[in-house]
Structure formats: C-alpha cells, structure tokens
Length: 463
View 1 (tube, helix red, strand yellow):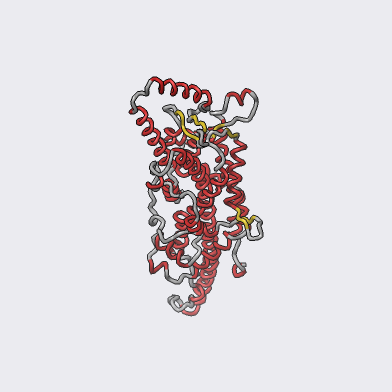
View 2 (cartoon, rainbow, N blue to C red):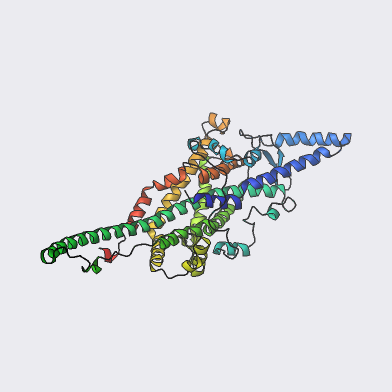
C-alpha cells in the first residue's frame, strides 16, 4: 500500500484517459461553436438540410440508458458523433474525481481516496532506460503509447474518430495495466518480505541458542572461579565462541527493498506495452456502439490476457512468460541505476555486499520458478474476477436494456457505456482505502503457500 501512490502516479499520468476525453470534449464544443456561428442557409438549402436530418434521425442509434452518445456510420465507414446529451459519458469521464470513485463500487466508500499523488521515490523514468518491449515498439509502426504528449493529443493531427479510438484503446489498456501491475507488485513484495523474514527468523533462533550456551558456560565458570579464586573477575573467560552471528545490516535490507523501484518506474511500462498490443489486436474491430454481454466482455479480455501472458516460440508453440525482466533489473548496469535512483548512495550501491547478492539471486530463482508462475496465474484470475464483479453489478446491473430484461436474455450494454466505469475503477484500484484488490490478493491461498516455500528454503547448512 505504501508503494501504490508511486505506481498510480505514473500510470494515471502516462495513460491519461481523462485528458483524451477532455480533448474530445473540447473538439466537440469547438465544432458546435463553428456551426452556431455559420449564417442561416438559403431556403432551398434549409429544405434539403431538413430532409437529410429527417432520414438521418431515422437511422441514428438510440442513446443507451446511461446517457452515452449516439453514433452512426458515415458514408466512408468512419463512425462519427451525431448528438450527445449534456450528461454524455465524455462529460462523466472528464469530471472523474477520486471523491466520486465510490459511485462505481459503493462497498469501498467507507475508505478514503485521494487525488493522484506525485511520485516521491526517486525520479521519473530516465530517458536512457528502455525496456525490450519499449525499444521494439518504438521501431515498429503503430500508435504511440504516450497519451499525455501534447502533439499526440493535438486536434490538428487527429480527427474525432481517432480520438474516439484512442479513448477506447487507452481505457482498456490502463485498466488491464493496473490489474497486472498491482498483482505483480503484491507478489514481489510478498517474496521480498518472505526472504527477509526467513533470514531474520533463522538468525533469531541461532542467537537464542548462542545465548543459552553462553549462560550455561558463565554459570559453570562462575562456580569454578568462586571455588578456586574467590571473587576474581571473569575477564579472562574465553568468550570467542559466543560471538554474535552475522546479522542483516540496515544498509543491506534497504538495498534489497529498493529493488521495487524497477517495477514502479520501468517494469510497469513493459507490461503496459504488452497490454496495449493485445488490446489493439482484440478490440480494433469492436465498435463503440456494439452491445456486449458480460460474458462477451470477459471473453474479449481473456483473449487479451492470452496475448499478454504468452509468447509464440520459433516452433510456433505458445509459452508462458515469467515477467522476470519486469520485476527485477536484468543487467548489473540497470541494477546500479535502480539503487542510486532509489536513494542509495553511489558508494553503497557499488560496494561489495555478499548478503545482498545472495538475496537478489534467491529472489530471482523464486520468481523464475514454476511455483511463482502458478501463483501469478491464480492471482490474475482473482484480480480479473474482482474487475468483472464490479462491471457486472454497476454497468450491466443498472444500465441493462429493458428489452433484453423482458425477453429473459442476458443484459447487453454498449461498449462506449462501459468506458466511464472502467476509467473510474482504475482510480479505485490505485487509491481506494481499504483496497479490495490488494486485500483479496493477500488472502489468496496460493500466495501463503508461496511464502511458505520461501520460508522453508533453509539450505543444507540450516538442516
């Protein structure tokens, strides 16, 4: 929970759904102002315009129950906006505030939410640090992932249809990026604390055993000295064998916990890029006015998950990825960058530290194991279930078509009507207190089992 503000600040800033919707809103207002400023048409032109409006009104789609816009397909096949009420979902999304998040999930309204905090750990992602996915995506043609760029949002370079497409893609990309990032951060933190907790537990047992031996030796020595030398001091007693065992230094512990800087500032971008590609492949052909059931939405998102969590080998087979390069810096250079950016002094970051190196390698081994892969899969399923529960209850439950309800069919909702709820859910997942997503991940049985595996990894020297 202490790390979520940093993660949330980066995701909400770089995937600024609200900024794109405001750009679209201003675009629409500017178009309306230009139409109002035009002189009245000639009588013949007015008659033709009235006739066209009449036929256009017959073909236009109805607004959804929640006030979403009505759109039709123009002659060139591009969806354009015809009309929107004063409470369109663009207005709803653009006015999202953390105090309104509870409207999506009232059960979390007992907690307190705050506006998107600024990162207080380290600096923004260095321009010199790029993940593999980022570098490959920059070389390939396609839309930019930086939605916050002024040039990228400029209405001069992007049409209204392009802005609508960006809202759709960015909303789903941000939602799934939040799910993946919080899940990975939770599991990584559990692994870190389990490694430190096991080490300190072992050291406490060793120290208790040494203290017991020292007490017994001192009692024996006291009785012998009192018998032969009276009250002679015990300064000559050989206590070398009772030296305290080596413990974890505060600097080592701090360096080990600083490793989360990589996921918070760099790793999540790699996840976001993978999610973006999957969302574009799956949702490119899904129109904003397409009516979907909850099962349809789940099927589409599961299709995105398959593209994110699996990669195709040279043999043409799918292989699950382990997100290791997302969780830990892959090279010694990036490791030093993480430590220094995380607040570790350069002299300490470069100093030889066997215990830190042992912790790092052990963590890397656990994260690359099949056990972690299984735990990650279960946790992602849990996180997706939480997302779908909210969507089914507060989107399909409150805005379902009366026609579908009366006919006993599964409720359907326009894709455009789902976007405001998904946008607000991201704020709730990142800023909600208590946090339903984080708490649910911590309660997963497989997470406790994974921690137990780390705790019982004593190596042969402790058996």
